[in-house]
Amino acid sequence: MSTLEARVPAAQTAEESVATYLAQHLEFFENHPGLLGRLKLPHSRGAAISLVERQVEVLRERYTAMEQKLNDFVAVARANDVVAGKMHHFTRRLLRASTRVEAVAALESSLREDFDTRHAALLLIGNQQDIPPQRFVRVVDAADPALKSFESLFASGKPRCGQARDSQRDFLFGAEGANLGSVALLPLGNHGSLGLLGLGSPDRDHFHPGMATEFLARLGELFADSLARKP
Image 1 (cartoon, rainbow, N blue to C red):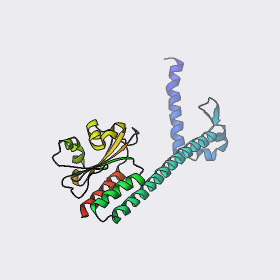
Image 2: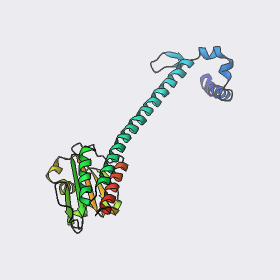
Image 3: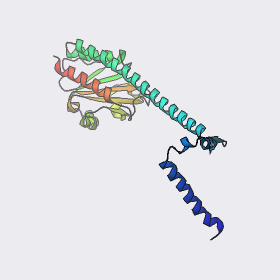
Image 4: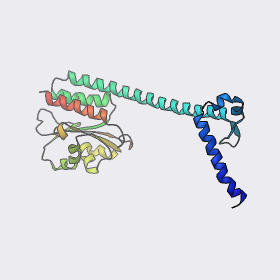
């Protein structure tokens, strides 16, 4: 074994011993401040900096990261507050509606005025003779074969966002469906027993599979409850 080969294990052992000692005596540099100031560490830019400078740099980096996280939290909170305000306006509209027809009108107005949704379609299932068909509303029989494409949505009972099948998009939105890049589908009632609400956007990423759907679910529940309880 060469002299160099014999020194490597010894040097590693010495470094480990020093590291163990410092870990067990954290006050070491407090008792030897002069040594602390003489220590140098390699910097990403190549120049050597003191340990104190490196510690300050690490703290600055952590502060910047924490500040960014805080800014992100504040932005999310403000966005949620805006949506909560819109939901409040929507709820008040429904409370003022005295009939199912007025509830449908309140939904259409709120989507357009409060939520700035230009592409929306309400599909109601079953006997809905009191609600006249219109551009926003379609009433279909429960046995309509077109509903089969929504079976998985109704089974989940939860909103779904992202890309819709061409047949689903065309059935809900008609001719304007070809211009929609993404949609949100909200089943209404118990597993879609009342129907579904479709929201569309030309932006392919506006309604995406990873987005939170809590507010969409609440909007659907509020409308479904209002529709079920009004004459």
